[in-house]
Image (cartoon, rainbow, N blue to C red; front, side, top):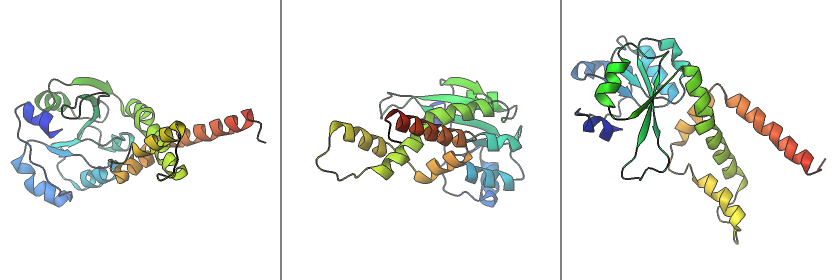
Length: 206
């Protein structure tokens, strides 16, 4: 993300400080403050800020952000499938019913050149439930039912192992936070349970 912003002629300063008081102390030095943490941490920071006008939040669950409607700019960057690791390409999602009127100027200045989609918080979270939440749940489940050291292993078993490995380099806390905060998570689990029952019945195992 930092590379995209610098390529648009902007300077990026990274910090691990995520206390609201620390952010407010340095906010006068910057045009924008980008919060690229979990939904839960972003909310805690925003809640404690007196001035939210410079905040760009990049959490992956937007329904909880509706309480800050018009105060912040709410975006999501999605890595395009098949993009080479050394030249990642992103799609930009602007969450219209959370973002302030500054959103157009912000996206133009920082993220010019990216394909931009506009979604409401509800539309965004429904899409994320399919694109991220469901695959993450399947990956977490595959970790519970496989033995990474199983020998010998069939091609079919390797398929499950590959699914379990798909989140190896991801922050597990961010994954769990997204699953917890997406409003469609319950529906996904209910659908999986129903489909497991159907498979069970089709195999006549009752």
